[in-house]
Length: 89
Image (tube, rainbow, N blue to C red; front, side):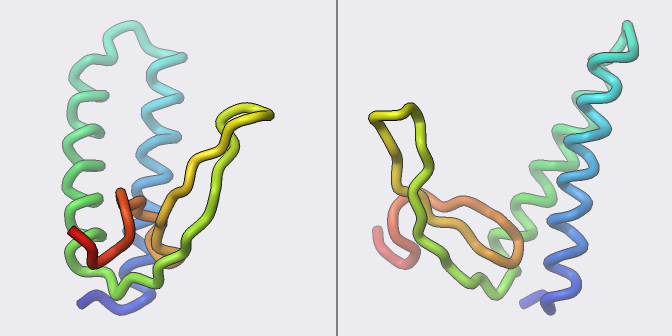
């Protein structure tokens, strides 16, 4: 298991990669290689976080529209999202 600082660091790194992607998408003409690399890095970070974080699960609802919402489960430490309740099949 990762300690809380490592988990937070990886979650922040993923957020920075997303901001980096957004910048290059808006500012550069040839973005395919950069976006492909950052996507691979985000997948690797997601896998590490989901497998090694000592998750603290939070169940919440997000609004999809004024009339519709969706239940979600996420980790408050690494911000990974999970489908269904953790530990259930």
